[in-house]
Length: 260
Image (cartoon, rainbow, N blue to C red; front, side, top):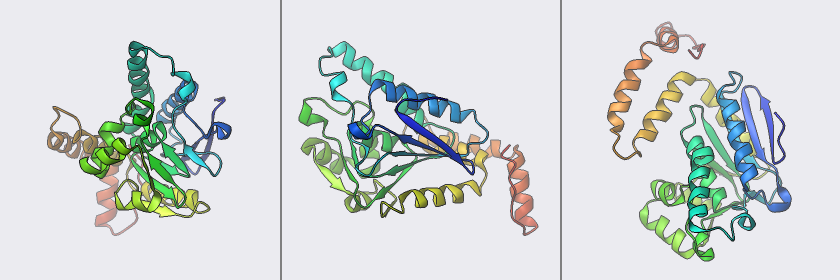
């Protein structure tokens, strides 16, 4: 599939999606959001893709934010539609993606960039990463899930401070806040992402997909996450992966999951 603003590469069943607008510090415009949606949608149906890594091109930025020039003159109605469409097409889509999504954060992840990273299932960062939600400095609030996901990850008080001050935190502070899982050098960032993806793929992808759904259910209003877990646990007993995993364990051999 041909794209203007993103690059794709599949290697050993790992899809790397790179946002490629380096002159704009990989800022998200409507076209890039739509291309990312198309890329994730294609990956969902591609049996050759087991894990997705999302990152930004160049050394300066993962995604430095949204492309403000696109919506500076929007009306309230247009602003609401911008937020709703973006959440549906990309941010919620990534958060609920049935395959693992790792954000490899290199450089700036600000505004919509941090919101995209937070939508991923977990994050790793290079030691030069800077993260923040500076929207209130523009007279607006985060509109792609930032007010919801940041408190879930770092706690209410820290999220309030980060959003109210519009400030940035560095990679080590992000690690301390539990916003990222690992910090490494920029040179080793993708190597670490690949290593984590390979560890994930040794396990049942069917079970992982079910686990993603169950974990996310804990954060959905009106949904009993325990019930989702019970159902997912029970459903697992009907999969070929369960038969293979238990057989391998009992026979003291390495499991070869069919991912069915």
